[in-house]
Image (tube, rainbow, N blue to C red):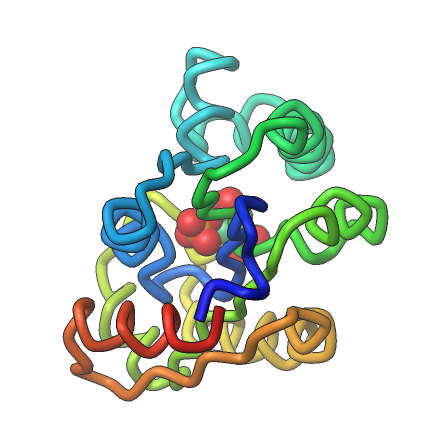
Length: 171
Ligand code: S3P
């Protein structure tokens, strides 16, 4: 294990609700890496929560901030970086992601729906047909997530520790 990583950053990609931030923190502790979450860095830089950034500046501006944060993080090493679900959309982001190891945390859509029920922090899901929209986003992005180095399929209810151990084995 760890042949793949060799001190490089580990990027966690995948849908909203996949557990990238939770898993990332545990992974960082296990690897002796630092942890960082692109959404959190964006919120700190913009001094606004993500729903407000979307409302006041729009998704395009959010995506620009996201790319900027990613490029600012990529010179660092030995970091676990939990990314926003849409990071894979911009092909230029892949240039940065490719500097590290990219793991797709793939959780069944029914489980994502269960976890995201009543969630107000994801602006893309604030609509009556959010469940169908979530499934649509996943199908639109599937081939992009599949560009990750590692495809980690997670079962509903699998404990973080177990997911973490399986991911470490793949590094
Ligand atoms: C988004 C996912 C969110 C956040 C923003 C957009 C997306 O991050 O970046 O709401 O397009 O999938 P999480 O994946 O951490 O929820």
